[in-house]
Amino acid sequence: MKRVLIVDDEPEIRIGLRLKVDWSSLDLVVIGEASNGEEALERLAAEPVDIVITDMNMPGMNGVSLLDACHAEYPSLRLLVITGYEDFQYAKAAIRNQVKDYLLKPVAQDELTEALRKLSQQIDDERRMHDQQAKDQWRLSQYYKEMKEHFLMHMVKGELELGMHERAKVFELESWNGLTVRFITAGLRERSFTGPAQRTPDKLRLPFELMCKEFAAQHPSMPQVFRDLMYPGLIHFVVPVTDQDSEISSFVSELGECVERMLFIEPALGVGQPVFGFRQWKEGYLSALLAWNLSEPGESRSHTAVPESSAAKSVLTEDKAMRMQRYLQRGEMEQFEQTVHQELNDAFYISQARFVKMIFQLYLLLESEAHTAGVAQESGGQLWLRPDLVLELNNVEKAHRFLCGLAQTIRKTAKDGAEQTESSVIHAAQQYIRQNYMCDLNLTMLAEKFNYNASYFSELFKAKVGKTFIQYLTEVRMTEAVTLLEQTTLGLWDIAELTGFSNASYFSSKFKRMYGIAPSDFRQRPPEKFISKHPKK
Image (cartoon, rainbow, N blue to C red):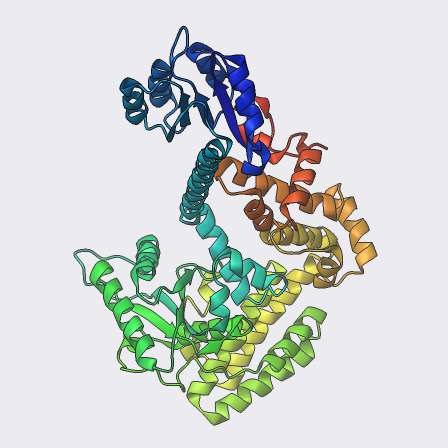
């Protein structure tokens, strides 16, 4: 409701104005009256007002002085003048102070209602514009960018099946589900630097990342760009494509030339196979990583088109990859090693290129398992950091020994920490909640993810964390909601959606129950009135 103050020295006039209008139908409410300009300014200083309806000829401070003061101190205030004096000086004062309407007494009911309806509509339009501007500003903020990048990274890992399409709408990505895209992975490798001084790729990581993001923001295809924390130093692009490979070749060429011009170093670029829809993004992303591992600086820019038979083509089927993951997770190492040997052997006798691709793909599978198990990889043995290492694995036995050695290390590290398994699982579950609080999470889904019975997992979670799953999830969501209430002007519906609550009404009631104050009142509070962001115990 917009708040209205009526100013007139005649009580019967003030009463008459109240009775002439159906205020609630116009989304208006009269919050008070004043008999002159001085009383009006006191009310304005004490509480928020949107519209002032004022007479001009009043004792003490008259309407002219009141309009001047309002225009100076409250420039956003809507002013409506109603007077019985057809005097030019009042009209001049009204014009000077940007009065929205000027009505003569006795004012007709329909005339007054129409004037107030216009003012109410103007306020609504201005607020919508302000909210949209605030939302646009927030969308450009670092917080929004980080959330979007986090969402993209989880989606390409296949970790956001639940609520994926709803989350895509929040980040204005829903239309991408109907597009054919290619993933492009870009990174720097050791090579001679052509600039004024010798520099290494690790020292150029930050400027390379910033330059890639700026390139993406300015490119007409408007690609999505993100980082994967498992592969520091690499930047990944999601580029929409049609049937023309020349589009991707042009993008790759422009990106490579931009990096070389700005940093004096050629990037290595890997182009993934074309994929359609969100469900294929994981496959497209992995194919780009594979292509990058097999690329050389400048190689991807040496062709006018990107051939379908390039390194982006996957050689390990998803079924076989899932089977090997199950072997690792169950500790069935003999079956795992036999399957790896068979895959390497088959690839070796088809071609050297296929053999190399198989090594990289098996390595990516192991690295993903290591990350899931919390096993840190030494940089000296990481193929994506040292693609030259794969050249030493020039036969099946060497490659098998290297890959199975990594698998044994992962398994042994996970086994050695078996006594801490439950604590580690709950810690991983908490981290998963903090990363996916915006999704529709539930205890059964989380228990299944970590291979536990739901009832036992519920008891275990409460014992380790000191609160139930629902309590913990709600507190994580509320902490994020407080941040959005403080740092943005987003509406309650947007905040509820961004923090995983089903609707604004439920969010508001939950917020008030936990903090003792409504979200809208929380935004208006003096800073000292709210001591802690953390919910009540």
